[in-house]
Image (tube, rainbow, N blue to C red; front, side):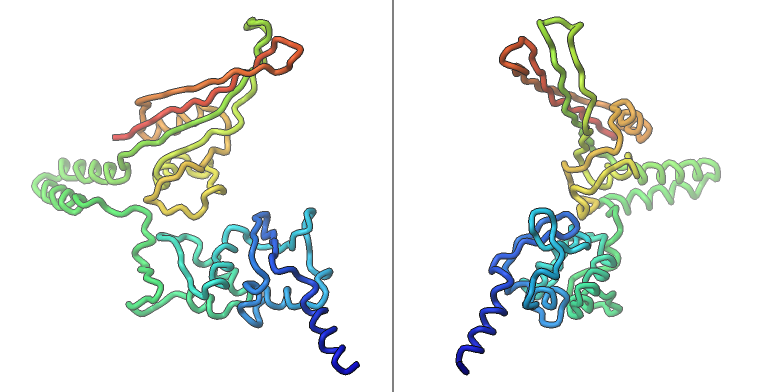
Amino acid sequence: MALADPAGCASEDSAPFPDIIELNVGGQVYITRHPTLLSVPGSLLWQMFTQKNSRSLARDSKGRFFVDRDGFLFRYILDFMRDRQLVLPEHFPERGRLQREAEYFMLPELVKLLAPKLSEQNSLGDDPCQSDPEEPSPGTDTARSLGAGAALPGGAGGASGASGASGAEGRRAGFITIGYRGSYTLGRDSQTDAKFRRVARIMVCGKTSLAKEVFGDTLNESRDPDRPPERYTSRYYLKFTFLEQAFDKLADAGFHMVACNSTGTCAFAHEQTDDRIWTSYTEYVFYRE
């Protein structure tokens, strides 16, 4: 009888949680091992998943353990618990928010790594100057020196040259591609029976800094929130569904269309009718010199 009690306690401690744990963090699903969640003793996840009864933990509709926090930033929390190292992408803009998440999950080592460093030697390899979203091109310094030299002799001419140089610096060259999917149902090969569907989503592809400059607050970045300014993305889309509105914003920013292409497919809507569904994908390529 004396030997049965420890064994019974051990089975009760290990029974509540399986080896593979599914988490729903702010709508983002993560799958990890139970020992990973216990890798930092005293942390919030350690407290949650060392309980003898898992019924007290919140779950979503599919039975996954639910945590009401930022689902995108949780990837860095989980990576730290796996390797006990902090690895962030270049030009990471969410450092302050990640530090707040680390404090919530009670990870003091991660909080210390995310704290601003005053010394020149930074173990994370982060330089405060690297947060600048626009890095100058190799010839920028030469162009600035020439522009300053040209501005010295004449007053009015120099001022206009300086304003022209600043305008050129503010608008960098590059491509932006706008894409959308459209469909309509056509019955009996007659245009009068066509049923069109509105554009569901306008996709934006190109350099992150250019896309943010052109579309501003109308750009939805939720599918690629951590993309650095000098990197490219094809996962942004617009918060409106009018192509002309997107074209107007591109034209106001100095872009003009240089190419476009479209593909289409056809399928029968119903076996018992002649109605056909046409689906197309169209892209417009814009360029600014």
